[in-house]
Each structure stands twice: as C-alpha cells, then as structure tokens.
Length: 440
Image 1 (cartoon, rainbow, N blue to C red):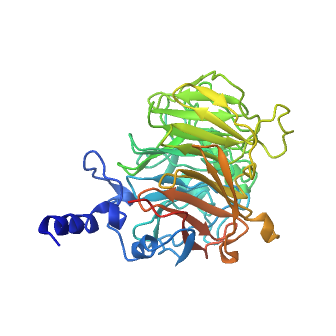
Image 2 (cartoon, one colour):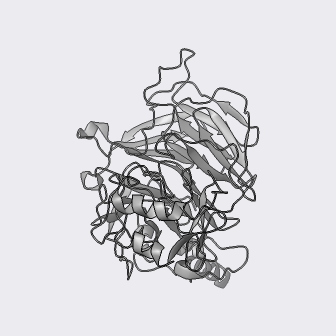
Image 3 (tube, rainbow, N blue to C red):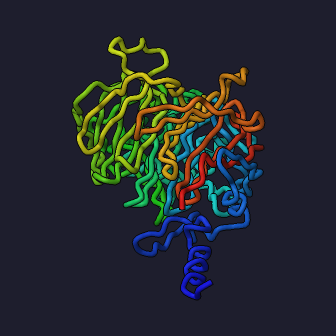
C-alpha cells in the first residue's frame, strides 16, 4: 500500500465524522453552569452506536444519573426531544401525569438534557420545590421582578410551570444563539392548570400577586441560554403568538428555521414567524392549503429546507385525492399536499409516535404504535421526500415499546434515540436505532 493512501485511511479513521463527534461550532464556546464542558468527548457507548448496521437496534441501558437529581422521568404527550448538535444532546421537557409531584416533593416541571456522548442525564431545572414554595417566597428566595417574572434571590428567571402541561411539538433549539425555546403560554408566576388549585400553589401565588408586578412578557416563550447556563424570558412580549388551548402547547408546532434565522410556529392552519430578538409574531400568510389539525407528527428537512406535517387523524380525507402529508416550503412560503401513495399513513400525535428526518438516508421516519396492543399496529413508516413514495412499515422489537416514548435523531452519529421509561417513570433505558448506514 502506498504511503499516501495509508495516510488518507488513517486520517479517516481518526476523524470526528468516523467516531461520531459533536458538530463543530464556528468558534469555540465557553459554557457556564450545568452544560459547562459540552460537547463531551465520545464515551465507550458510542462504539455500540457506530457498530449499528441497517435497521438495527441497540439497548444502551439506563443513562447515568445526574449526581444530585438522579434520573429523568419519561413523560407522556411529549415524544419530541429537541436535539442540539453543538451540545451533542437533546432536551427533555413537559409533564407526564398531570400535576405530578415527585417523591422528593418537586413538581414535575423539571427540564433535562441527555448527553448522548457520555450517556448521562444533566438536570437543568429539578422542578418546583412544592414543600418549601411558600416558605421560600416568604424568605425572599423567590420573588417577582419588575417584568412580572418569578425569579430567585439573584434575580434569575425561574421556569415554574413554564410548559402548561405536556410539551407536544412546541419546543425547539436555536443553534445560532444557543437557546432552547419552550413553553410560556401562561403568566410569569406559574398558572399551570393542574397545580394551581393545590394548596401550596394557591398560597404561594397569593403572596406573589400582592407584589403587584405586571407580566410584561405575557405569552412569550422561555429560553434556556446554553452559554450562560441561565433561564431567560425577555420582556418583549409575544404579540400575535398562537395559544394551543387549555394545554398551552397543544395544537402548536414550533421550529427554528436556520436559513431565515426565525422561529416558525404552526397552529391550526396558520403559520407565524418571529424574530428571536423581539418574539413578536406575524402571520406569514403562505400560499396553498395547510393541514387543519394539530398535535400530529412533524419534522424539518434540512436538505430541502422544508417542514413536513401530517394531516389530523380525525379529519375527513381530502376529496381531491391529497395524501396525508403536507409540506411547508420555507423558501417559497407555500404549502403543498402530495397525492396519496401506496403505504401512505397519517402520522399519529405526540403520545403515540416520533417523527424524524433521517439526514443520512434522506428519509422521513415515523416510529409509531407505542400504545398499541396489536403488533401489527406498531412499526416504522418510511417516506422518501425525493420521490414522494412510501415503504411498507418495518417492525420494531417488542422490548422497545412503552406507554410513551421520548425520542430524537442525531445526524452526527446517524442514529435515532428513544428513552423508553413510561409515563413519569424514572427507571427507563435508552435505545439507539439506525435506519441505514451512511454511504461513504
């Protein structure tokens, strides 16, 4: 073998692409707080992921617990975990059992990041301490700032019941600003419907309300700044933002559009766009006919700059012969609805499916049937956005199924990840799946 050829081979095997390293940032980022040091160096479990062949699964086991706060809990109606390529991890957010108070007394409005390179949980917010909520307000540990937001004694925003119920499809990541965006449909001091009538919450809110501060960020989403390690809620407000009903995030789809550097929101047929600097939403008024429903499978196609949504399962089929998938084209601000094809299916909602765009294979995959008792009602549906064709669903191992699953796709390692824990259970395991190996 020639020396030049050998050097090329050695360079490939030592490259970040081969070992599944995190996406490189344009400039080195120094992070503070819980995410300091991220992205992590690939750990030993990455070899298991790298070894996956076509249509293969591997059980990575239970992620390492956060040293202080333990294991994250699985949660229902929150199948979409938000992946951050510059962190090498994905955010897990949203309630499970309504108003669930964990055994340690903390409300399950907790927020986590799964670090896939070291297979561990990092707790960003442990949840609201219900046992000491009133006491902490009386002591000044919690108070309301001039923007009407609950803050700690240092003045840092506290995301108390920031997500009104489950997270559904209503959270996203802005890699340009390093912001995880979520929730914020309620007021700034926690008005979540499932706990506001519990005595600790009622008594605490009464103490906060007498401080007489107006919520100047009404409707604006919260964000976690991954560089500073702090939660934020700018007081710009969120004029024109859609509200998803009693659950807040219900019937709302949210994505960051990297080509336009704006936030994209779809709710019941209307598309709104927002500048990250102001959070002020305007009706995009796209052409074409949009899907009318909500809480359906949705994903972003980074190759074509498109967003795919499914028609609502309960909607009457289109008499014009349109299929179940609607496409929003970012460049043209237009909807389209490709015709029905063999094996086409409506993607289920956030408690029964995960929908991911697989960049390596250029396919949209729907992992469906988490709650189905019949094996024939479970599987992996594949949609080819290049041809508009579908494959017959492939099976999923029985061991992967649970009452609810939380998942995401990482293009850096070309694998889909699923936290299989059940609703509000902290004894889950992480599975990885590869649809097809990337072509070299």
